[in-house]
Image (cartoon, rainbow, N blue to C red):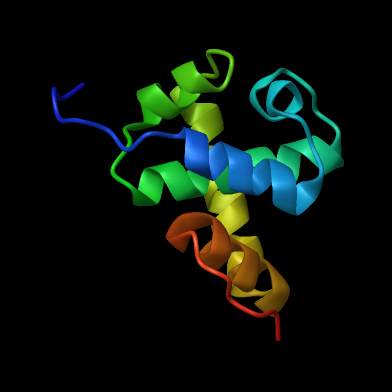
Length: 102
């Protein structure tokens, strides 16, 4: 891992919790239900786009293995590419701005 300062994950976590109606504990926890796993994968992708390393993301999310993080990001990227609504949510989460859904 590098010694660079990482982006504070709290705003991303808060925005995802608000967007999807999940708690912080659910988002970071071990739950595997779709209602929690999709927002968690979105968080993985958002943090990765901010320069977080795979191991750091995994550590934040209940010590998930970096290969789980890779798979989650890959899955979410595919979903974002095929869904205008999810693209809009991703923009709101990563930019912290209000982007209307299409």
